Length: 136
Image (cartoon, rainbow, N blue to C red; front, side, top):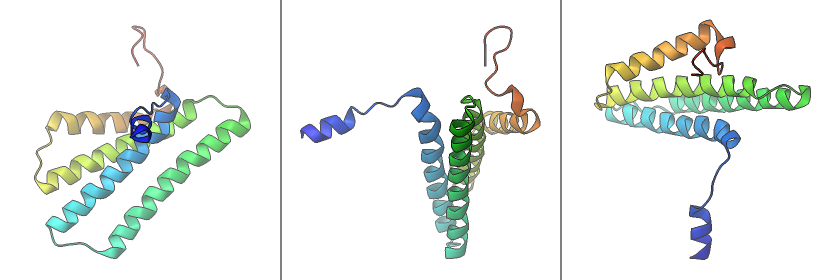
């Protein structure tokens, strides 16, 4: 019982969340994609393999950026940018899968995610910078 209490009391630092959130969202996206395929009777091992390989590639992308950051003494901004981009891609994909499954996703959420994704694609240098009011 004590081990369970210790497990439940695990806390993560802010830096660890940069890696945890994309990983959790990748898993949720994979599962929501599977549910979507299952609902439509379109489960194919080749599609699952492609999705898994994509998730592995995204994970490797974050890992490469982290290795470059550490080895070149760069700031955390590069890792945050890579993680944020993957987080947005995963959230968009999860929303699309939920929509296809039949779970209503408010259009303002979809629009906000796509807008943020486009903003990062068009000007990644502004990621994490504060405006004049101190907002990010």
